[in-house]
Each structure stands twice: as structure tokens, then as C-alpha cells.
Length: 85
Image (cartoon, rainbow, N blue to C red; front, top):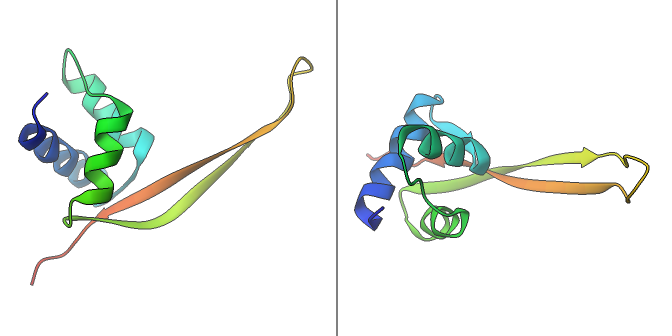
């Protein structure tokens, strides 16, 4: 997926979720709507570098141990579309 098309689809994903969404929600939207999808690296690079998207918060998920390995934490960014004047 090209860079311009990916920016448009990230914008559509944020608008579909009420203007705010986590990185995994954006990835799920892109993967559901496109055959080839996009890599998490390319999506996160565009989100962090494009001035249209603002990082507003973090989501923390604590995943408990299943008895075979240690517990771990997943930290994910929440993004919002910047309001243009």
C-alpha cells in the first residue's frame, strides 16, 4: 500500500472510531478492509511523523502469566486527528 493511500486509510480508521483509536484498532481496520494490509512499522511511522495525527494517551494491558512464562505488559499509543482551523 502506498504512503498517500495509507495516510487516507488511517484517517478513515480514526474517523470510523470517533476520531480516536489505538494503534492496534487502526491496524485491524486496515487489515479488514484491504487484501494486503500494511505493516505495523509503516503505520506507526506515519502516525508518529505526519502532523495530522496526535498522540494523546497510552493504553496499558497487563497480561498475566499462563503458568509457562512470565507476565508482561503491553503499552500501546492512542491517536487522534488534529483539528484544523
